Length: 392
Image (tube, rainbow, N blue to C red; front, top):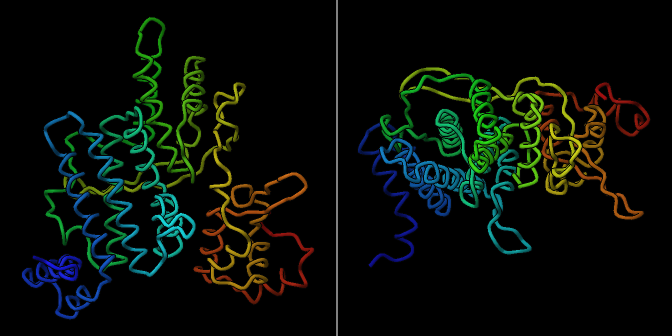
């Protein structure tokens, strides 16, 4: 009978033995694999197992429960890989108050800090989580083409993350023929969204009696807003608002303005196709509560405390600056004037300033691009408190 030490070391040994057998890596890399943290190896093994299940279900001939199986396993694969990477970097993945492992959203936030996950990559994984949430807890529906581009884009994100953190990719663990494939021609994201929107409008026509199916498709499009928003939670009030907008004859740009800020970059073909979601410029949008009856076409903003969850000190620690230098950099970048970066919570007479992950990303990108902190401090430090930011 295997002891605990054998069980936790088994994924490491199997990976090392596979690489030795393939003869594709040096003995030094095999030793690195053997030194990998055991918890990380177990989590990575779970991620790969779920990834195989998701891809197998996507390529299967049986349509019963296919989308549910794909999304459930793909989201699990993403969460396990994020936690494997964080564990490998020795980042805490347990909540100190509850004693339970952190959720998917917190994983993404930490991965942006410690695993170099970009905003576009986080948006792709966040969308998969939102689609899975609807699929698991209620009704959600997206077209086959939209499902494929999201599955394929997610696989690409996970492959990039594996290579960056563990030095091995999906090609080292899965054959090329096992990747998600489709016989349908790949079209632009905007076209796919337009097509599903027209389908919703058709189902909502008077006398069709297909409102439940239309609402499931609405939930699917709302989940796609994860590409452009940090916190996407689809509620019945959101769906009601969208249904009202569609029935009032609103066009897709008015009802789903966030989706117009997203596009796809697709290269290659067949099993070698690569899909990446990227943000593009879009029209300004208005944020309203989900149940605002007057603004059927506006974008809802939910749970602000989840979005703006960092204090000024936590933000400084995250980017690796002292409190004072972080304040100077915030002034230089205009962080405190950006509503997507800063929010003031008012509780009676008390006002609490909090920052979002957007603030972290802007500051981190500035530092990574080599911003001259000496110059920033000279202009916006102690002597520059009253000066306005060049980027208000």
